[in-house]
Length: 467
Image (cartoon, rainbow, N blue to C red; front, side, top):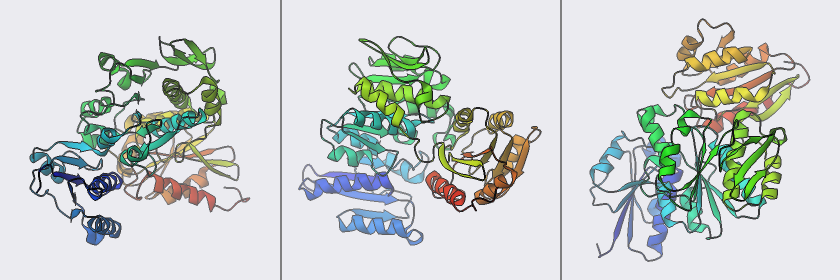
């Protein structure tokens, strides 16, 4: 090894791992002294896509090891870990045992970025707010580039190509934030903190602490936006203020100094030069109380990043629901179908229930539980919906949660059977809502795959024959 040679280890060959490895390989190909090694606990023999990615990286100059639980001997100058690898995984423990700094791909992206980053996190709503914020900025003539835990562009990829005048609008998960040390976005949005991913983080306290790392390194000149209607995120206001950053409190019910709220029936953001009245909640195309909160957060962030108030008004009224988040999926025989597959925890379903006024609901719940208590969810669904169709791996837990409640429930093994059962129950005027409250991995590759299958089933239903 020559003097100054950097040895980079990448854990995992998902989207984040591939992006990190390719960035480091690009440095090597441009003449920098960089050696790249990639490891993944999964074996290539049972995963053709993984094997193909490994071959590509080997062709580009990386050493790649599949089906291993330990990392090669160091020393390593830097370890970049994919967000899907939990802290207790053998390969993660092995990497940390080398003494090297272990960071996420999000932190690597921040380290190389010329453009400022607006980071959006929270248990629920972050995809909508990320997409909406980018929409508002673009409407104001700002080059906004969506990246992170949304779509197909990693933070590293966006950071490597974005000019200084652009803004990287990054959805960041608790997994990604857990492995950050110096990450400092220009604007950070913390929407809510409710129990989720406890199987990964180990406790509610650890999960909340990792979410709060989004603003841990911020300071004067930066802006932190926190929804204080949510107790979990409201509890982090003091820590945010201690950083020296400007803290804007978002609340649907009361306008705090420097914050945002609904004032006299209009979404309003208080700026240093006075309050900015935007639009009425009814003008939004995204439905539900939670989306009023989401719109307030996104508008506050957009104004802080330099978007004009007129552009923000136009953007708020033109923004459409994101895919798999209270997305209209079609109407058959007078029954409306709504795809909320991204609702992978109970709190997301509780928010979705507020989006339908008095319309009769049939809610589809199921999938793989992430160590969440389903009892409060069951009681809320029983109080609001006419029926619930329960399915998937967590069916025994759902059965127990709904036991003794006064409502119609149907239990079936799979989501396709759940859709069929819902159509038998539904009458014209009903809404069939897929809002599963659980992860998708018992039946599907992702929540997106689950949502697309739901939409396909609705699309293939016979038209004109009733339910």
